[in-house]
Image (cartoon, rainbow, N blue to C red; front, side):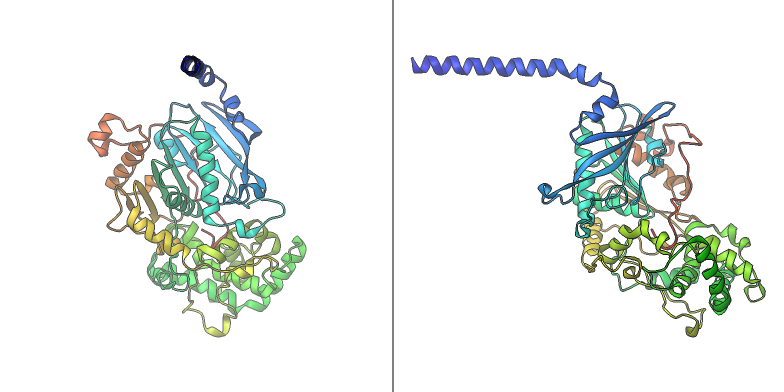
Amino acid sequence: MRKALRWLLALTVLIGTLSTAGAATAAQPEASSKDIKERLLSIPGMSLVEEKPYTGYRFFVLNYTQPIDHRKPSKGTFQQRITVLHKDVSRPTVFYTGGYNVSTTPSRREPTQIVDGNQVSMEYRYFTPSRPSPADWTKLDIWQAASDQHRIFRALKKIYAKNWVSTGGSKGGMTATYYERFYPRDMDGVVAYVAPNDVVNNEDSAYDRFFTKVGTKECRDRLNGVQREALVRREPLEKRYAEFAAAEGYTFNTVGSLDKAYEATVLDYVWGFWQYSLLSDCGTIPADAKNASDDDIWNSIDTIAGFSFYTDQGLEPYTPYYYQAGTQLGAPTIQFPHIEKKYVRYGYLPPRYFVPRDIEMRFQPGVMKNVDSWVKHNAHQMLFVYGQNDPWGAEPFRLGKGARDSYVFTAPGANHGANVAGLVADQKALATSKILKWAGVAPATVQQDASKAKPLARYDARLDVRDVEREPTLRP
């Protein structure tokens, strides 16, 4: 009797299992036929901020509930802003982050155009509004941020089941690299643009060497002359700065004084030019700084470096970046041999000066070494793109013997806006073909001949803006 009962029970369970499986199979077409907004909002923790129309796409601004601490998810949550540029679930997906705030205007990054895919964009944790309140700053680190991406990927992979490629420029390129280091099984490829790699924070001679060779001597002399002259004329130009700050309501509590803010802005000038301008722009720099008017010196410095930035109001949105620079990422320090020491009072200020004093900071010297070593020995299907004239490329990621199907390319004459399109012809073709292959959409002709590779989507002047990902100077 017991055997018969067990057999009957087993049969009942088996029938139930088969029925459930059948129901699940039957339900799949129904789930996939749901509107994409409905599918996105069915993800636990996902909520809609707004949807914006764009021809050929659906564009959503969303909030996603994230743990403040991925190691202790029960210790509180915050809302992280993301956007989804939806093409089709049958297409690959590009996961983009700039490492700062996310834009809520529809746009398409270069890899997204190349693969004609969807794009998910993430706002980096602690950039407002994606910041816990109150903010526990110890939970702002590269592992926590990578874990944010990992959770978003796992949630959306159920909808976007095809290949995924991560990408980002500057701090976003760093972010894509760190994500790959901690979660190497998530992405099918990585395209990191102009990603700095400050392995040893106290050794920055590579930047000094860069500034002795970049561009032409004529251009370097023009820039150095204006920078020096701005410090020689410190007294009258600081008076103008004080009037400017008073008129705009700017204050200087975080950096410490107007004098420090003035010098920091002037010392950013040469770096800022090469980061965001081209050699062809040198004609806009006063050729004879010593005989230039105060207006000419002020306007050149303000246009390139921006006198509003080192104010409390200018720094506040970038507190998360400076916190990370002063705890894990590192920050460059360069020398100014063309300026007499008597004119330089502070030199490059460390990140501590740009973060409110009530936020504690302690630098962790081994973090970037760990990432650098991992990339050298474990990079798989990773592409790094740098600009020849971009200061941040002075300390790039490099590949070692353990790297597989990975590449580091430099676009000639390019600045911080370097991209695949600006590479020399054979590298451009190879990079494009690799992105297509990693995304799983390389046509047969490209698989046979990389020189045939080209973007699958047509260029859209509004969607494919190729401007430099500009942050205030001396920020990656």
